[in-house]
Image (cartoon, rainbow, N blue to C red; front, side, top):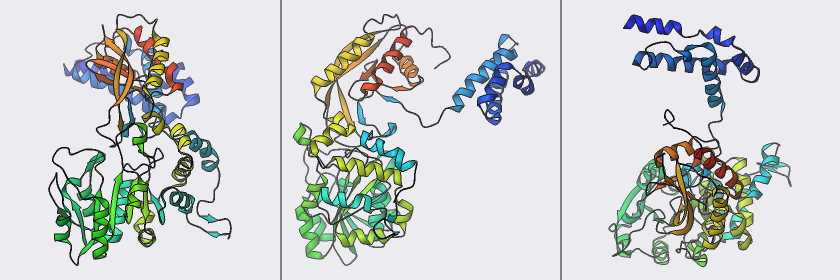
Length: 477
């Protein structure tokens, strides 16, 4: 048996033979030789693995140089693709963490080319001709929008919490309610980041109830900070109680201890005005007396990934002087995207229209029904034994750890399994170019139009039509 396998190994075309094949020679014109060799070796290694495992027991047409060369070409196309690619989000989850969270506004995209493709005044003071600070590009507008005394930005909210705690409470105590010890995506936990900062966590209260006296009883000479964490990604309901921000602020003032609130998602618009569950705004937190507020730039704000720190001037300046700041700072592309997003908030009506995250979250059901009808019209003549098509009502999610109890009524297009199972169809769409990320619900493949962009409708329709005529998907699963 071993000898038979050695014969099969020898039957495989040699690398030099494949390089001389016209198909591969043509590929060498547009691809680096090293990448072509990598594709050849990957294909040959695949054959060898099949021989060793007994999947191939005799040489067939697939061993011919022409056939192997075509496989090499397919593999070459695959490994030549960028790793980071556009996908179509048909899941209905607006702030989808795995799919890049918020889509940036067009205003931000328009400025990318000029800033990324040329030099800029990132850290140059044009008025004085001296070195400047990169934070000035967003600090003034953040102060304008929130009435904060000072502002700075780091690369994400976890970093914002980390540097704030490390600056203000290293080797000292931070008091926090047990009911607010959250974990967000990527296993980021408040207790863990607190340990990394060097601060000592003091838990008070119970999971569902924390009273003012719980904070008062633990305050001592080593208490550096009172921390309030907004539980944006879960809700404790029923027999619950937490200390309102004004009471916590008064307690902090009596003892000379600053109060910090980690809002997590953070938003600048009161979403309850648009029929959604109330989410505390950044402005409200500051108005209630929080000395420091941290939140994300890429969730409900609808901008790029960033960690925004607002609050008392002396506290923000101390954080800015922390040497850790250099390791956590944001780059020019993040700054330009954040600045352009923030500029839209000067006119709330404009922000709701032009910031994709806000627009998608607040889409009316009637507008979604119209979108779904347009998509359905593009595929309504599609007849296939592989699946059938149906339009139904459904629900979307905000995502990004925000508004976990909020159900957004939506309209969705479903593919009901026929010859193909829902799992086979979901895989097929995920392997499409560009990939379509759907969701499975009640053994159906769901396309939620809330998160499908208008420019993507033709692609979605083409993918559904291609699947309609697809034959067996054996070997693609």
